Image (cartoon, rainbow, N blue to C red; front, side, top):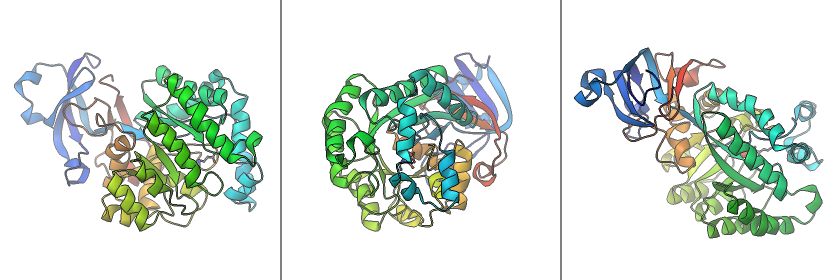
Length: 405
Ligand code: NIG
Ligand code: FE
């Protein structure tokens, strides 16, 4: 019954998460959701179920709370090896930047990723993906960026696509060739950027492996001028862009991204008001990554109030990666959004549903409304605030992916 193509979930509390000015999009008590194939056909109070849906099989949900399936819109979940040794170095006093400059950091993961096969990358990433799925994640973005040469970047993107085949989850792939300068280009970052823009990007796009293009704009990575070269190439191919910006310093990366109508700018601890205004004008989403903030013991807070004041949508993501955010819990990410960044529980849930969808360019998911994909999480909790209030607890009861329970 539950897997039939048409059915109605009943005895729910529903957090629709539409942007209508109400908390959680206006909680519905004793609610129901009619599902037709992969799509939501109707949402509302049980008492109002239209006659057309009354004959469909029902599934009683014991008063569970229904939210949109969660969306993790910024991850580096595919990589080789791990960096527990650098964790030890940092505990002995080295900074993230010092480790990176000493040839560790991203480059140490590049070495481990280049020697891994696609199968090994998939096998390593699966437990991380499964941890997210177990928390009701139904859409995930996965970046390349630890290959930094055509073949290894391709392997990462193939592994990401493969993960989407192996599990009931939607995968968006982002090409992050401009993540770091690989060792063989040391001192020739411009040459590497040209290779990324002129060869790697067009080739991997031709192979159908890229949904969006990202870069790392930072002192230890690339300048705005270098990122611009990559973004121009992406725009020429009709690909949307996003950017790791203002994480450790303010280089004006968010404004640059906004000038390309970026889907999002991410991290943003050092973002200033000019950058916020540029993002607002461009309609870009601010993706905050509290896992990296926490791991690096950052003290500069992202400008949450300015983002609110200028109505920039705020999203939260795990940034799951082996260096700055070895985090595979989107629920804990929401808790950090509240506790570290002082976001409200309503903002934290919007940040991993509606606004995360926006950060990936989707308008068919992220809310529970007629016509949206039937990606739904059912939770054994009373109130949606519990999702960000509890620490290290997973109340997921059931997960519906494209109508499939
Ligand atoms: O999003 N900031 C740049 N990239 C990753 C970190 C990558 C790494 O340290 O391996 C991030 O935090
Ligand atoms: Fe990242």
